[in-house]
Image (cartoon, rainbow, N blue to C red; front, side, top):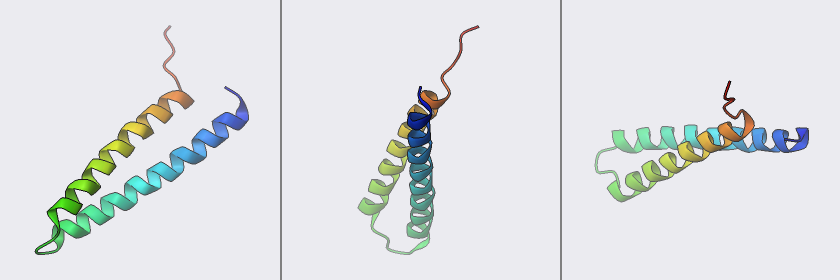
Length: 68
């Protein structure tokens, strides 16, 4: 992998991690509010899981497993 590609993937990875943290905070805030929108909460949780999968994929791209 070229250094430029790795830098771009690292920047994307950091943006996705930040979005994941933001969604975590939003989910927590919605859960503490009485009468919160359960559909919105479910959407946030689904998006958070999608981000987790994408983050894992990108981490594997940057540092792939080495079979010894």
